[in-house]
Image (cartoon, rainbow, N blue to C red; front, side):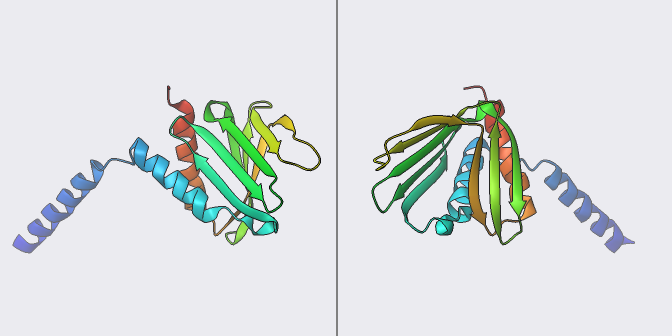
Length: 152
């Protein structure tokens, strides 16, 4: 009888402790999102890519900068207030993460392009990714929606 009471007390205390556990704070969410982008982005499909940077900024912008071996640069940027949806096409091994906006809200710029520099707008940013788990996609969607709703 005494052992069962002790066991019930321990279980209740554990449940009580877990019920007060908070989720990630804003800085943790930002750090997690950027770690996710840096480990999941898959530049292997672009053989002439020299370097890249994909970040979620603390002022709620998604920014992707790609630099090619010939010096050409591509730059993509959008404010998460304009974010509407995220889709994933692929398997857990790899695929394409699609970030969508309300209208032509994604800035697309090229620099040092032999064909000429181009400024345009897009409604979707396609990111090649690898090693994706469904819970990571759920967490990313939660983080993006958090920063979308955040009042800056």
